[in-house]
Length: 171
Image 1 (cartoon, rainbow, N blue to C red):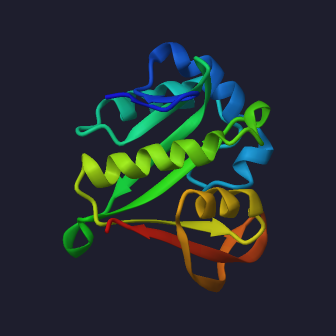
Image 2: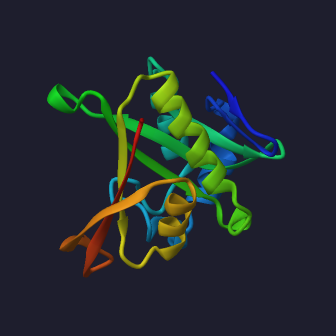
């Protein structure tokens, strides 16, 4: 499964991505804006383990982001269960050399369309740390709406912060 627009492609991970995945993800500026279950420092073994996990997905829900055929980041959907089974949480990161080029917004649009059209999702949501203004803008440009702000709900980098909860509904 590959999803494309004019400049980016969402594709399954390849084991050959492990070196660049580790290099881009082993960046404190990336880690500061993602959940703590992503290890830091991030090693090539972490990358291989992640790639193997992604490649076992059925259906595919986690993708490498390519920008003009260069690995630039990662995006995925985490399907929810039970009464939330038509909902997924979106997560993504873009390597620092690729920041500010609109890649994340296009990737979010592509995977959102995939979630609605191929996975039959009704709702996609995510939480963004209050200090991550760039990600908030990405979501807003991609059509996501701010649902609420959960005050003092996140503990990241030894600080308590607010979470901005965004969602989009398949109409």
